[in-house]
Image (cartoon, rainbow, N blue to C red):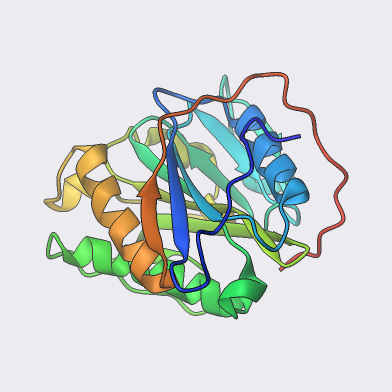
Length: 241
């Protein structure tokens, strides 16, 4: 079961996006297991949620990921996970946002959702006069050829989990220990180095606004929450996007 009580959509006319912030640094694996459990337990009336997290240093390797792209992990753990994509890095100073979305209710396909998430990031960057772009065949957002946001999703029973990682104000050195997203020599950047703010809270607020707008949902902010380490995995009956 999820650590969270199930929430309900107020009415078809007022669709909500329940936004949950996780204080401090949240270990990756318990949050991942909680996303699985939430997705497994939800039904057609469960409110869509957006989880905002900062993780301690960790490399995650997507379901089709190749270990050859993990070059020198050193003391940073590598966690194989059930999302799409290759290897990426999460660490302090990076906004990780997990949209737990019912695609059927929003009448969206997975490709359209990816496009909308990318657009939300592009519009967030534009708030600080930074031009973000897509790259054909390589999900995420790029600035002047360098990746600023990675994207990897999973779909189970028509609902999504996993999400996006947006570099704001972090130590980028660990990206040199991997081929980011499976691309050798791919440059990585962050918003602070492009003239944007160093405050995650400031960027997070704009990102939530843009994600909610792209999904045509009204953000409602829940109290801060933490995940216990006792969250158990649930059976995986999903289909890879």
